[in-house]
Image 1 (cartoon, one colour):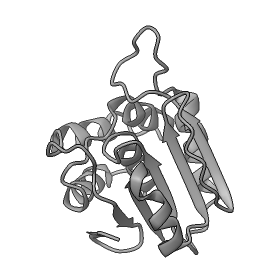
Image 2: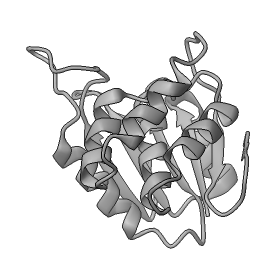
Image 3: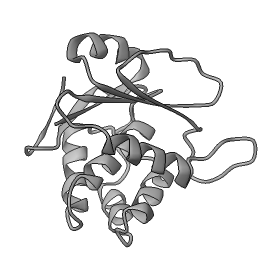
Length: 172
């Protein structure tokens, strides 16, 4: 049961190499990434940490759609999650899915695994906050992501994976 997280420029290669059954695109409104997968979710919102006029903030509805999409994933083949840079929206989505797949109390462990797998990961705080509320984690997800802090500076994140059945995270 593997989640693969990627920036946009690596998606085509990772689709060919890993043949994921599920593809989640988290892109800004007006962008046109057109990738195919058996099961596809296409969410459009800006990568912002707080609502701003003229931009679309990640909403509870966006995160609920992501979590519902992930519920339909058996894990027999990987799920690929991507955003523009592979640093904020996609890492927050992977973190939310990992937390949703495990019992409460594992939020800090998942945040630490995320940091080990992706030193540049800076999960979008609005996505994390919405997921925290939807999963009834009472702030544990928010606190865990705050504890790992901002990731290393980068223009593009490196693709990575989180294995939801084993410890550790590996680069694909």
